[in-house]
Structure formats: structure tokens, C-alpha cells
Image (cartoon, rainbow, N blue to C red):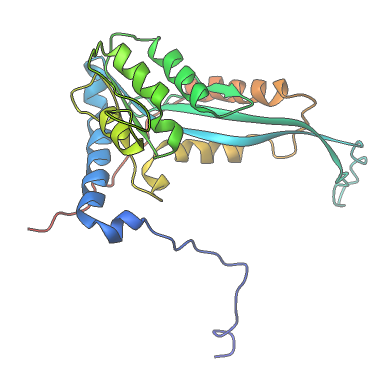
Length: 256
């Protein structure tokens, strides 16, 4: 009885759920089910020359160098590592996980993660197959609904309609109107957004978990270029044996 009442402060379980799930269950179900459909159709889309890409950012990858060298290793004893370190900056990775092949395509590495960075990363990826259809699954971060991204997609899709003015009118007016445009099913390049607090719906999060576990935890980096090179080597090696994730979740059952 006493053991059952002990507080286990080392045991953590996240509890926060998507506000969309409680505020608008129908909208939540539509978004979840659409993403599941996109995943399950990815192989067929790939066979027909299209691309289904799960995208997100891995930010704050630190380039740290220990200030002093480690002590020589003594068998049977704990390693002695200096706790002080020198910062050489941080790296951000914009990753594009191909749902159909399991490959990480055209990783974009930079010291920043801005609206401009995201558009440039998307542009570099699409240039690998400029006439194909592209469906991106990502969260609702503001840079995923930016004016620059709308203008880029409109240009790539040959859309000549008036986009309006940011903050004032038309498609560019606000994030909601821009997201609606970017999500349009008739566009050759479109974005499908995950519900709020639903990163588990984004397959690239699984890949991020893999790279976090496999990259050396105690690696010493003496410049920002070194972690970038380490990430690119990992991607190259991973892609050799890459396989798509088996997505078994079929979505939210619809009530009749």
C-alpha cells in the first residue's frame, strides 16, 4: 500500500492533447484521416511519378567542443570528462522524408530556420523533379504558411490569380487563408497540415528519433561545419538501406 502511494518523479507521461480534438472533433478527424490516406497512397503516387514528403525541422543542434581533453580511460572506472565546453554555434536541419521510399532527400542545413530558409529548402527539393506532383505533410508552424511559400507554390503551379496583400486581403491576408491555398487539392504542389499537438502524425519525427539515437552523444565539434558533415554522412549511410515505415494507423473511426 505504501509503495503504491509513492510519487515516482522519474516517471513521466505527456498528457497534453490536441485542442482541435476537443474543440472540433469533426475537423480533427478530417485532418487525421486525410494524413493517413496520404500515407497509405504514397506508394501508388510514387509509382505514378509523384512524391509524398514528410517534412519538419530539427533545430538547435549544438556544435560543442570540450574545453579540456578527457582523462585517460581506466578499466573498470567511470570516464572522466570535462564539463566546461566551448560553443561554436547551432545548426538547424530541415528534413524531407520520402514516405514511399524511406529515404531522406535533400536535407537542408543552416544556422537559421526562417521563412526564407524553408522556401529555399522546398525549392531545392522540387528542382530534383520539377514537373512532378508533390504532397508535403508538416505541422502548422508559421513558416509553413508564409507569404513567400504561397508565392513560390503559385509560381511553380503556373497560377496567375491575384494573391491579394499580406495582412489586408485575399489569399495572403492571414495564416488561415494562406494555409487554405497551400492545402488546395487541385494544386500540383500542396501541403497537408497535422492537427495541433499531433507531431506523432508526422513520419519524419520517427526518423529524427533514429538520428538522435545513432549520432554519437559525446562527439566533439570544433566548428559548425563538423556537425553538418556528420549529419550528411549519416543521411548518406542511412539512405543505402532505407525502407519506408509501415504506417498501420488508419485514422479516426467516423460515427454513423
